[in-house]
Amino acid sequence: MRKTAPRATEAIKWGSPVLEQERILFAYKAHKAHINFMPTGSALRPFASELAGYKTGKDTIQLPHAVPIPKALIRRIAALRVKQVLEEGALWMGRGK
Image (spheres, rainbow, N blue to C red):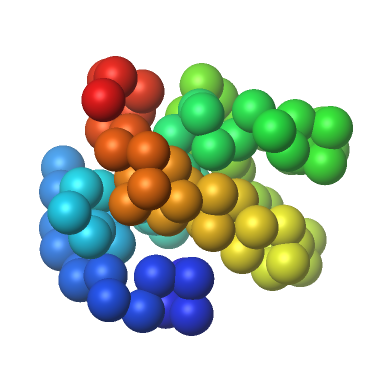
């Protein structure tokens, strides 16, 4: 995540770690059986076919601890989210521009 957003700062929002730069880029949170990665729905939609094997929500992906993290896919999703925020002015969780 750091390579995707090298100038982002870390913070805690709603009890979850986030990386933010101008706005929240993404959040993540560890649970007993999985990690939630929360980049927003607009960053997930283009990757829907690649995420078919994962449990997803409107704005989240569950990454089970028992399965290797798809690092390249997560980097591509994160890069799209950074582009959406820094170049297109997207807000957190699809709340417009």
